[in-house]
Each structure stands twice: as C-alpha cells, then as structure tokens.
Length: 134
Image (cartoon, rainbow, N blue to C red; front, side):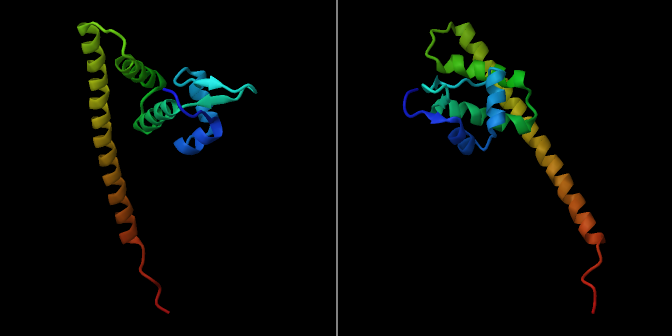
C-alpha cells in the first residue's frame, strides 16, 4: 500500500492507542512501521492503521497476542496475492472462520455480562432512598 506516511503520534490519535501500546505491538511483531524517516521516526501507512485497528478490536474480546498474530498472518497471506494451493487457501479461510466464530461467542458472552451488570445497577438503584424530604 502506498500513499501518505504518518508519524506515530497521528497513528495514535487515529487508533486511540497510546504511543507505548503501538511500540509494544511493534516489539511483539504484530505491526511494523512501513518506513522510517531520515531522522529515524517511525512512519506508518493506512494499511498499518487498519492492522492496528484489528488489534485494537481484538484486545477487549480477550484475544492473546499469539491469537492476534495468528489471525493477522492468515489474513495477510490471503490478501497478499500469493499463489496459494487450494489446500493452503482452505486452511487459511478455515482459520479466519474460526476467529469469526470465537468473536461471535465472545460478543454473546459480553452481552450477557453487560445485561447482568445493568440488572445489578438497577437493583442497587432501587435500594437507594428517594430524595430527602425537606
């Protein structure tokens, strides 16, 4: 992907991730800057931002760094234009499908947790005395 390069501060603002978090994802190999400036600053593309958004969306669903890496590797290979055998393509699609299923289950689980939390909050609110009469 070509186009404009962004420095890490702009990427952080666009992804709502901290500089520290973006650097951590770089250290773990989840995302790499597409280039470096002459001064050594990290430079990122829209593709790098999209990759960070995938990571950001996976994190609250409890996916591990290894699981994130696994999904990103599968999607990278599928999107690369690489000449894949039918068996390799099927395996990669199955991998992505597996993550889609895990994601759906985790969303259901989170909705259940949210409903329970809302019920609890309502129960507590009911127990509070009304406004004091003056």
